Every structure is written in structure tokens, then in C-alpha cells.
Length: 253
Image (cartoon, rainbow, N blue to C red; front, side):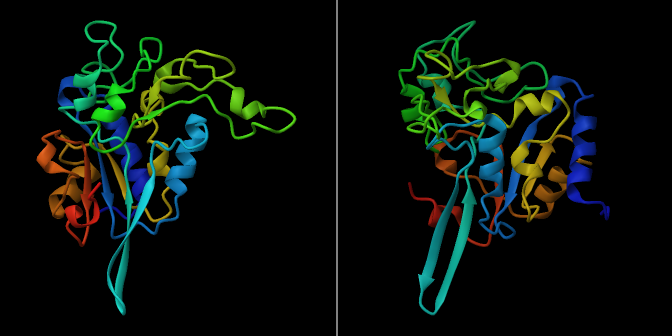
């Protein structure tokens, strides 16, 4: 295997993947829990990248403790959106059809990702309740600097999720809408890795086209026993885990 930093390897994989036909490419993420140290750099990087409001985390890292003293261990479990191939959130959304509020993308660099169109979302929250992974959150329109003499400029500047310009300086999108991780699709379009992958200090995250057998994520997936969260849900998630424990022992929500 190459001695290059895995970020360099994955960047090359990403650039190669973008040259492949959309139908042949399958974006996926793999997280090696054996390497995750619970630093939350991925969470902080994501909040900064997407200018997220208080209490909203596209990539939270949950902590689980197992065993009894003196044989006690802790596992850190990052939980982004699973980008399911059978997403119950899409089925639950009442705004369906062409121009709907959420769907499974099939074309372009975002093919395979489950996006949200804030302009079409009616804020009913049904998708939030339908997600078995608690990956969706309603934007309540709050600000980190609320209650101070002035809202900070970085909070009211527009964000560019899904390649569009969204403002939170007043009422309207995305305030009042459901929001979630989207594999940093705005970065993918620009040929960049998701920010959670690039900020991981332990290099615990892998991202790329798993259909490309030469890609690092495909090789790591092949070389390890991978797991998914809640396989009994039949959602076919695109986020895989490598762990020393069975995930169902950790994740019982």
C-alpha cells in the first residue's frame, strides 16, 4: 500500500471517481472506530464548514462505555447521515415528485446522496421522526451570539450547501427546515473530500467510490469485517464501520 498520507490517496481517488459515469460511481464512507479518539475535530470542522446553528450537528460523535471496573473500555461512534439507498426519510416526506423536498439523487457528482431542498421543505418534521439514525434536525433559527450586543457576521453570512446560497439572516430557508449531513456535496463538486474526513486527526475516516476496486475505501472495506448501524431496518446505508465490538451492543437508541 502507498506510503502517502491517506488523505492524499483519497484525494486522488476522488478526482478519479469524478471522471467516471454517475451510474458507475458509488460514494461511501467508512469509519474505523479502532482509530477514533473522540477528539470531535470532525464535528467542529463540520459545524464551521456548514455554519451550523446551536444544537445542530451533522456529524455528532457519541461515546459508549462497556464493561465493569477494572475492565472498562470506551468507544467513540461518529454518526453522520447514512445516505441510505432505501431512505425512510424520503418515503415519509409529504412533498414528493419532481421538485420534491428530499430524494435520492441519481445524477451528477451528488449521485447517491440524499439531499434536502430548503425551498421546498415545509418544516413538518416527518422526515426527522422517520430517520432511524436521528440524523436529521430542525433548524430553529437560533444563533450562537444571540443575547450579545450584535449577531456575529460569521453567523449571518450565507452558507452554500448543495451548491446554492442560503441565508439565515431572516425568516425562510433554511430556518424552519430539516437539515442534515450531505457528505459535503458542495465540496465534492469542487473535487474536495468531505471536511469531516480531512479534519480527522486519527485518519479514522475513509471516503470515496467503493465501486472503484483500486480506491482506498474499497481496499479497506475488503480487508476488514465491516458493519452498518441497524441492519434490521433494511435502509442499506452507505456508511460502514470497522470496530472491535458489535455495533448493536453500542447503539441501542
